[in-house]
Image (cartoon, rainbow, N blue to C red; front, top):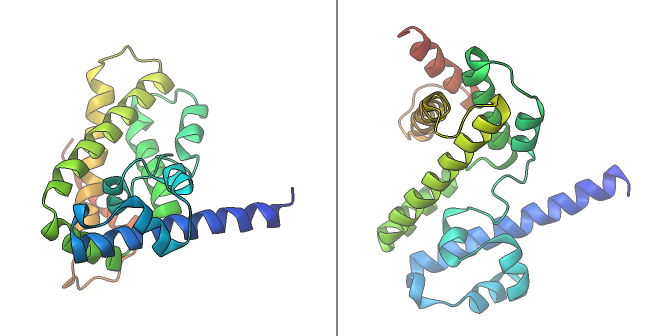
Length: 201
């Protein structure tokens, strides 16, 4: 298979996933989660029910944008394959992992606006999103433990993941602020916040 064929396939996958997310959010805003079926969502996008479940585990996950394969970019596999680099390098490597994930499937300002409307229509989506975020955090903690050869429950793994998670969340808030007077791109904002954190220690 040629690299051109691979890129075409990946582009089609990304377009299908985006179409499902957009339609799920629009239908939720218009009708609420119980106001449409997965079949109706699939009809909107022109895919089968089976295809939907290749991308998302539920309507809720489609609205939030969390796919069945939580890391289609392969960033986590590359992070693990790098092997133990020591605790002092861990935060930098975790930031790089998150930025690679972002570059593959980062959310746009328009999508943020859609999500806010969907959450206003269906507040229970916020709880679902927090549950998914917790699962992602636990997965990253396990990833760090495995890569660094740390015992399960080592607080350094959890602390590193939680610290980086806080940097990423606040950076996203800054990036998507409508009244932001900075034109910095997302990685620049992340690195600026990380520099401020380093000054504390």
